[in-house]
Amino acid sequence: MYKDIATPTRTKGILEKYGFSFKKSLGQNFLIEPNILHRIVDFAELSERTGVIEIGPGIGALTEQLARRSKKVVAFEIDQRLLPILADTLSPYPNVSIIHEDVLKADVQQVIKEQLTDVDDIMVVANLPYYVTTPIIMKLLTDRLPIRGMVVMLQKEVAERMAAKPGTKDYGSLTIAVQYYTHAETVMHVPRTVFMPKPNVDSAVIRLLKREQPAVSVTNEDFFFTVVRASFGQRRKTILNNLMNQLPNGKEKKVQIEKALENARIDPKRRGETLTMVEFATLSEQLYHIFYREA
Ligand code: SAM
Image (cartoon, rainbow, N blue to C red; front, side):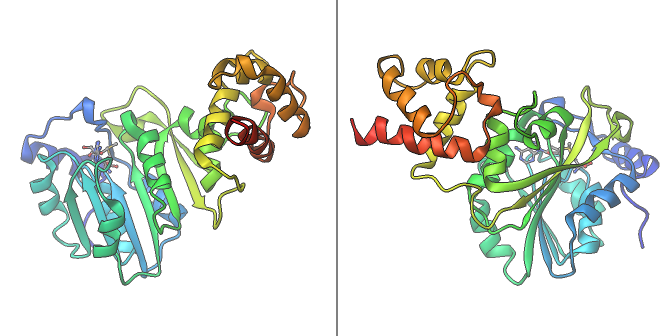
């Protein structure tokens, strides 16, 4: 077995050998603690038949741990300067393939079709670039990829919002967006000291296990999410006020919105953050009739 890339001495050696300088704009904070990596990989519950998608392999610290514990790893890396380094550090692992592409622009579905065919399941495992954690996670969820789930490191605050429960300060439209597709759980808090360079924020690992079906069934998903975002529009306002102010022509439709709330058995004086996902779905169905069917 080779010495882990993630040890501080080996990481420093690799960076010096290639004269690599971190780009803050690409969210480059590399992990330098093998034990944290082992735990992240444990949470992903990989088998030798699992295919893994990684975003941002950096110099390969997490990639090598994934390669040792899965069938195949496909990793998207945006920074061209890292490609020769990865070719070197990951040379002992023939089951790794690096794709030089911005994951936000990538056709991940196609990559899966081409590169992760003979596997039993697929997991996304990554230490995400913090400037784009939410867009990356939402892209991977809304692309409806055939994945079992994701185990990813991100800012602690964002993890808490994704895994929040109704009625808490962290509960919001991001919570609903993520939990609509997945069961979400923060599995580990990670100190700043295990990164090089140290980030300015605290980190956490979140596990998102994809639901077989979305958490609720709605006629029109886009409208459902519009209602959710409108309901959280201004935190201190009641749900009635938020819907009137945030939905298109909401003010003119006050009476109808009141009726929809009544039909959904939701007190118009409640605040958005107290509604469960099921209540949002019921409300959205009622409002959908008013906004589209009666138009
Ligand atoms: N996996 C490594 C580790 O844990 O040490 C590096 C993680 S570092 C937080 C994030 C990595 O994502 C960097 O290598 C960065 O270049 C890469 N990256 C940033 N934006 C990206 C994007 N849009 N698509 C693909 N990779 C990206």
